Figure 1 (cartoon, rainbow, N blue to C red):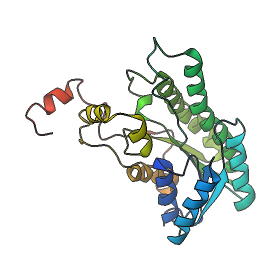
Figure 2 (cartoon, helix red, strand yellow):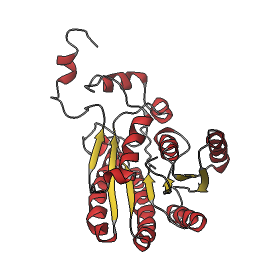
Figure 3 (tube, helix red, strand yellow):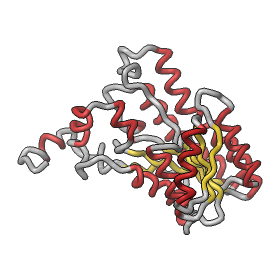
Length: 265
């Protein structure tokens, strides 16, 4: 029970990595608040988890509303009296419009960067104010390997995630005096509904060929890294950017051709 007596807020938490984080934190004894735009869906998730004996509550958060992330933090503090852990999971991109440098509409680029970065900044700033008053806390940003390895498309998404990686280190340095730690988990391609909906089978297969472990990650594997940063096991760890991608981005650029030449994968 690594998170016993801790109050945790997870954004964008009704499915995928966010939902996996909610479940993992609750299973470790935390009182978890699930932030979502669709409170009907959030309520269904809460009821299901409650039947499993997990302590989870819904709070409203709409990424399109600038004040929504900070208000979600305030709702948690109002209800629980504190916030110990914030997991910033929200992230978005439309691969049909977020293209390469030459073809992406400037407004699409700016909107994508803003949406992804604003969630981390606004929620993190609101949470840090309360954490400082209570003696500390942990902020965990769910970024992406796309913020480290330039892609052939999704320029807004990658740029926003790269900015989140920098912001993670900046928060770690500036808030250390208040006992607040900040770290980031960078998922590689993960088997979520969003990936299945937005990316073609051909692209997913092509991507996996460049992953040394030979498969997509699972949401639960990303959540395990988030729980580590949320818990006191990482009490002396801050400003770290942890890539959880099966080794993607580490190998020679011709990795796929060389490793698959004998037909093993």
